[in-house]
Image (tube, rainbow, N blue to C red; front, side, top):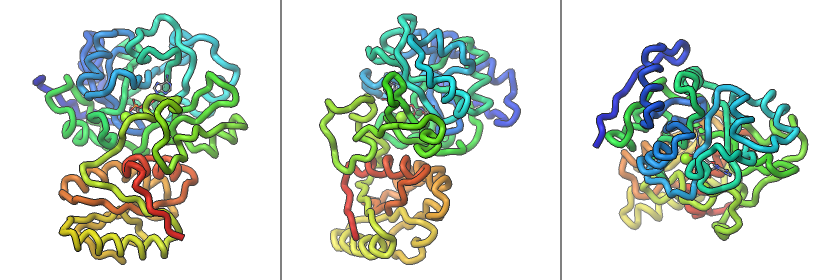
Length: 353
Ligand code: TXA
Ligand code: MG
């Protein structure tokens, strides 16, 4: 067990002495969790193979699933990659710093463990002052997967990080609650047209508006488990976002969803199961269950994304056996919300008319 140090940092004006203390840990091969605009990341020097190995170990993450490498200046992208495609500049101009991760061909300077042996590398520039200051003071690109134990929902607060990783990492920079709440969008631009590998904080609509055609990897819209060898992104193969409780996702139009959710609550109670409902502002009032929580209004998909992972963790604290979740629209950040809910449910999805 390590002693995990918490530094409370002002997100608008990060205290440089705290950032330097954290950067000193990164420089000597240690692990520091930090906020980004999406979720908290667990950082290590991306060019230090031992540090990255320790990162995988702290999370219990399978070695075949590479982390995203975070940079604070564009020239690092050119150092870490080969054959940067023409579209890159446009994408960077539109979306960086921000919740968009780009997949490039990797350069030989990147240790193999950092890219999990792949010939490609995933890079992003986060839009968060603490994250950018930490990368700058560390003087190296920072490999950072989400700062949760493998398989758990990503952390949107320092408390979530400590719930999973206290005693397993050196420090956490506590910059409050993350704004977006779901991870970055992952876009493979090593192929043309680019392929969306993970929907996230940058919407598909915004990407298409900026660069034209973007294909969807079949895993993204999958409503059932697809064969692992079809994965283009290692993360697609792994169980993810799963709370302890069993998740059942109900998709369809709202009145039909409400009727099905009520029926499922009844069925759970018949089996003496504690049941929670992950509802919306428009529907939460109608349910009588052990726990009812709202993701937010159906008219505000951004707020649903911001609340999703926190609520999944809260259901675990309430010790429910089953979470019945309502489906929402797959527009904007709704595509990311539904992708996470489908994965969290292990594709236990009920479609109603
Ligand atoms: O918002 C985010 O992206 C957060 C914050 C901390 O930046 N990070 C994050 O990292 O979500 P992680 O490691 O939990 O997810 C990275 C995803 C995984 O699904 C992984 O398989 C995929 O990116 N990935 C990494 N390198 C890749 C590559 N070379 N090709 C395809 N997918 C890759
Ligand atoms: Mg993750």
